[in-house]
Image (cartoon, rainbow, N blue to C red; front, side, top):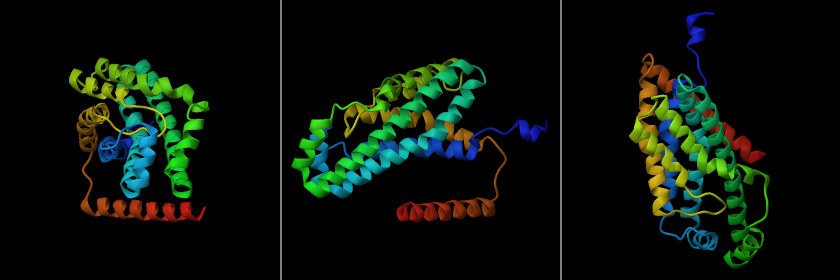
Length: 239
């Protein structure tokens, strides 16, 4: 097997590095945008009714940040796995399952906001309130949302992927609220800031750890990615 083949890893330094930088910033943006509203669901529905654009942007940033985290988690798990494979597998898997659960919550959030558009905030609040405690299969991942970050943070420290300070910052994500139609709090901001502090320097280091890319190639790939995103967007709207 050639050295080039041996050096390959998924998702690679570009996707992994960009994800480590972009995803935490999107999460933090989404959290800050709705910090002025009380976090419980009736207040979130009322906030959407009164400020639909602001709340839509807030929840969209959080959702996209959550989705964009998967390359970051695989990347950091790959680094941890070089010295502590068990911690990498368990911690990385738990966090990934937690990301899926949060994405499911975001789908319910979107449906709830559409209910506000169709029926008004009061009716939407009654409907959501009547079904708020209903069982859903992804609730089995709820504990993983909370504890996965701690396990991964311990793995980062033991493997020397991150130092003690950055590992603690990463573990702060375990304090981020879970569930449907959850707003923000000071704790939420601290958790997202911790994620930014832990992952952004690692993302920059990941991007720098490789051969330089020419400006022409960088521009070409950027344009191709933008074009692909635009095509995927319109195809998704058509579906």
